[in-house]
Every structure is written in structure tokens, then in C-alpha cells.
Image (tube, rainbow, N blue to C red; front, side, top):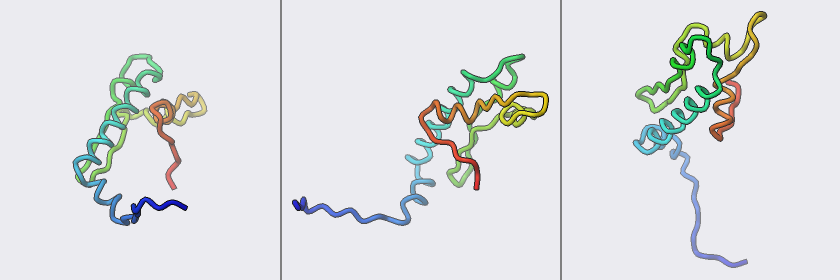
Length: 104
């Protein structure tokens, strides 16, 4: 085995530092904006209110969320007995190159 003399040591505090650091916030903001763009491209359009309400929200802890700002956003995302499941946010996540997982 050839050794290069380089050794990687995992930093267990990396994720916390990344989440509150400026580069981590910027990276997550850009990812959120990419997801919004993809979701807007595939969102159903009756009036355009849902599509236009999609946006990125951030908080002081470094968390980023992609949000539909209309009350019926969840109905379009998950469907109802009368509304098919459009899932523009979940599909937007995947089309932006990310993996969506349901919350634990």
C-alpha cells in the first residue's frame, strides 16, 4: 500500500459550523433558489398565484426552507380526494439534483 502522508480526520463539529457560516448559508440559499426555479417550471398554473408564491425562507440558525406562500400549497403537493397529487416541490427537489426524504 502506498501512503501519501495525508491523513483525514473527521471533524464532528463541521456540520454545525457549516450551517451557521456564510459559505454554508450561501450554498443552501443557492440550492433553495434552484429548487424554487424547478418547482415553478412544473407547477400547475390556473391563476399563477401558487407558482408565484414559491420562495426561499431563511432563519438565524442557518436553516433554509422552500415555501409555498398560499394556503392551498399542501393540497397541490399531496393531493386530496378531489385534487391530484402534483408534488411540484418534491419533484423540484429531484429535478434540481437533490434527494427528497420524508421527515422522520
